[in-house]
Structure formats: C-alpha cells, structure tokens
Length: 149
Image (cartoon, rainbow, N blue to C red; front, side, top):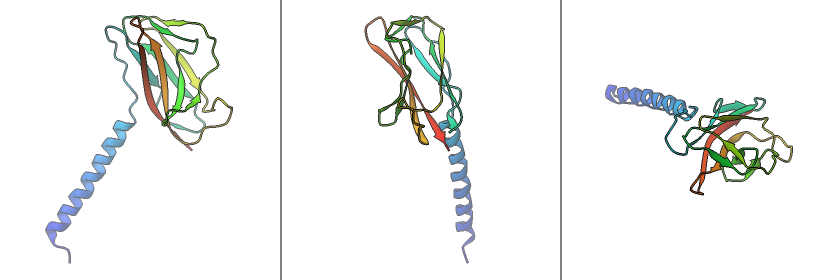
C-alpha cells in the first residue's frame, strides 16, 4: 500500500505539472503585441504562431516608432530563417531603398516554400525584418513561428 501522504503529494505534483505545462504552452504561442515607442522601433507580427503545412503565413512589418525606417530593398528586410540562421526564404525584390514612415506597415504572405521552390519541413522558423536607422545602425526584429504537418 502507498501511504496516504505520498499519494496526496503525488496527486498535487501531477496536477501542478499539468497546470504549469498548460501555462507555458500558452505563453509560447502568444503573438507579439504592437506597442508604439518614441524613437526608432520595428515590430514583426505574424497572424498566428503555429501553422499547418497548408496555411499561408501572413506577416505584418510595422514601423512602431516615431522615426522613418530605411530598408535596403523593396522587401523591407523580410526573410525567413532556420533557427541555425540559414536563409530559408527571401522574396525577390528590387534593389531600391524603401522607407517605412512612422505607424506605416507592410504585409507579406509566405506560402511555406523555400527560395529554391521546395516545400519547407515541419519545424520552427524565424521571421525577420531589418532596417537602417538615422544613426547608421541596423535595427532587426524577429519572431519564431512553428510549422506543423
């Protein structure tokens, strides 16, 4: 027989672990929040964090600051990277300087196809955008998304 105290501690431990797991899963799947700030600020927001392999990935790139952001091409620095930093997808774009005014945004849709035309595998990917600010420094923001079968 198991002592009553051990059974109670075991039940409380199982319940606590389940509750913590649900809480952490909920935090991990939260879409970033748009917060406007003074100075340069860039925000990357996908429409959701977890996608099935047939879902298009909609991404908003937003100038969430009070200064214009300058991008080196017409894709506004939009890229999909593997977690190891390899470029998985980069849209074809004109090599013209593009500017995003404060509170302005651009939306991109990625159909989960790599730059070489093959379908991506299930896994985690980083959606990235990078801009140049007045000081000459680079401002880069990213968010991680999950792709399931």
